Length: 157
Image (cartoon, rainbow, N blue to C red; front, side):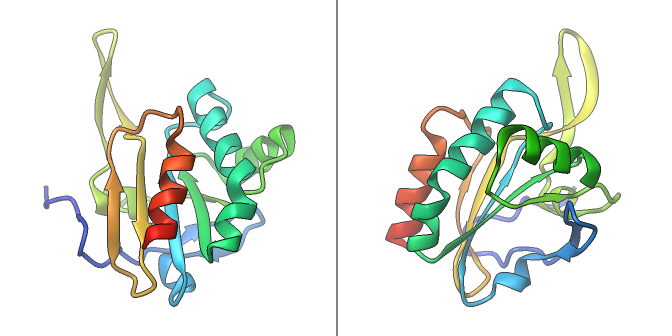
């Protein structure tokens, strides 16, 4: 396994599917600051809270010239339902391909829960600068207050 990209490294540029069937990749945001937040699963409590928090702060991110992108392995159709159910405004993408962005970042990994081992997403957020380089990484994110903390860091960048 390669080392996980860290601050100073260029964000890998791997296309993901948008809920409307289009594609999105990090280079689409070149010249703009970008926050990519990876979360395990739509409609689970922590992930729902995280998405609602980022959506609530989206006007602030917009004002600061920062694009948002929430990513999980959930299929586009599931994202559509998740967006509709919680009136989410932070854009989502599906990183469902084998060897996708979360694989490249090393955050789609073996997890353990109640003695069960499975592949899962490590809740991780990347702040990418206007140059396409990773400015900051939050690993194993705790949801409470996270979106606000990321906003402050993005404003300071």
